[in-house]
Length: 436
Image (tube, rainbow, N blue to C red; front, side):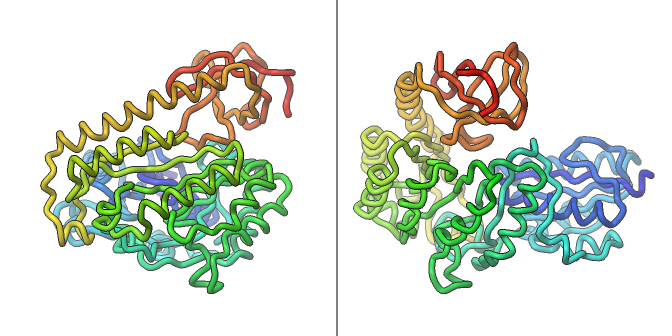
């Protein structure tokens, strides 16, 4: 029984989660007993799906590999495999430094992994997955790779060119997810805005979403990672006029000064960035806008940073993530610039920007007191049910906490009156109790 048991451990982003879920389905159909994302060492085989995007992610992946190498040496597991971005990016080095791993696979190598384990790839299951999360929400990866040339990013070198998946294939996968109880579908890609250009010779995201809206049991469709340049403007009325599309715009701008956007090799300047942000605010009433920023990219002067600070204070993003620049191999920035800004200065800039955002978030949350919002209950944790509004994505955004004394069910929607707030969380109680 141990030899037929496989443990899949997934690290990194939601795209890796989707890859693991598809592999899990294939292995289960091939007769294996598969457990997921576990420290369990009772399995004969362990597969680690790694992340290699930035330094912290690499360290986590390597630490995880070494932990299972130790378990293998102690005789708890028989075979250890590594797949994903880290092994795609550093295959030769890993083979040399950690030879105890039986075999390394890169990205998009599911058929090779299955062959190694004696399982024949089933084409009829390519749009099927075993959901590893709560079950009422799931990610739909609509493309692979990226054609952008951002100076700081290694994704094109790791994942390759942008490849859109056909609408028909995505509709079939989304339909299967809905049949299995998924109520919130989260569209992910390295860049949703680009979808369709390679396959349909035009931006095709609005058409894809229009098709997905035909799946009536999907109550929420959420969009992740919309590149600012050449934003598909048809999305604005589509989101505005369809309440089942979350009013949640995730649009990473990375910086605001023309000088830094140029050094970062972004395809937008400040005027264009402010124009699209303004159109989103005006065209989709009630939408929240989420962005990400990089602090300490090579060449960022104090003047650049102060201009960014002022912009963040003035625009007042609803959601904001800030990351310290990581000097990554296989990127333009690594090859062309020196990583001259000290780490402590990078981190102080990150902290200062997040402090500004914290104060903005406190004010925005205080304004929600007394309002009634639609909340999807994700889990029960201690004395609270924990849920989210359409304005919040799993794991990255704030949550709504409701006392566990209320009779709520996981995976259901409720109308919740907001009674209290903190900087990054809301508290509430059922309003006209009962499932929506």
